Image (cartoon, rainbow, N blue to C red; front, side):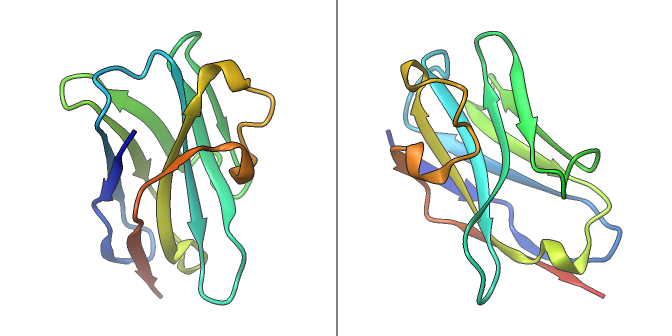
Length: 126
């Protein structure tokens, strides 16, 4: 599976931004999709995950209520709608995928994901 993230950029505090992750696979049925981020000087952290089968989603506490992960079946992308952005959201954002059979329990664990996109930079100015 090849993933390519896009949509990053510079946005002011409080503004919105939408990231997209294009997949080389035609369907997301057999995958769990995740978004992670890494801020300068910090470790990579979990942002959100989605399982198409069962319509399950899970968010980090820091983004809950502001970010929404979804699948656009027409574009075959996994999107991350980010609203009310804060300077602390500044980071490189990565999309990732793992096979659904690996389980939902560890959706927030980056080490459980098999495929990664190249990352897209989000900068939130104060």
